[in-house]
Length: 265
Image (cartoon, rainbow, N blue to C red; front, side, top):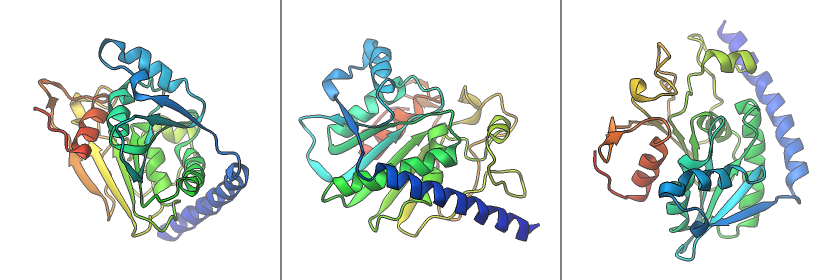
């Protein structure tokens, strides 16, 4: 059984590498990046409209720009989830852009299986890093379904610089609808199998409280719970600033934590 799983894994890898080579050949000279200024993404009462502006951008990268950003050596990419309305990322990409000059929101077709979406994302990042001279580190944040995408992407990136991959409220274990739609390799317990990533890649799992997450609480098991040999797991608190910390708001908690912005329980 173990030998069969290994063969399936490598067959899947060969298929993904073919896809990757094709994507690289297509994108090498045609990378398009749109842009939005932070001041054009107001939060508060206008956050839903700002989210619609964000999620309506063309597929690929949208650069979030701010006059205050100074750090140019770290490239940040935010990857949305399935059927995202964009608003969950508005405050977070704005905060990142105010510090980091290279902050991008990545839009993709969420009807695509996550391993295939990861192939295109990895090719796009490779091209983007090539255009962003002086990049010393790449940081990916993937929320929900996007967490699956960035975790699959982790094994496909070979950049010779440190890479951080953060999955936020992501069903990395898998779920029935995903397995019906996508031919993903699975382990002996039915969990999604991910290819191993290089030593230069650091992986972080940010898990919500299962029963407080509207996207997951209907599941009998927590689809976020999967173990990797080299992954740091953090369970998010039940509340943030006095409110329930659920599926979408988890993005704000993680980005604040990453930026060192304090928040109340």
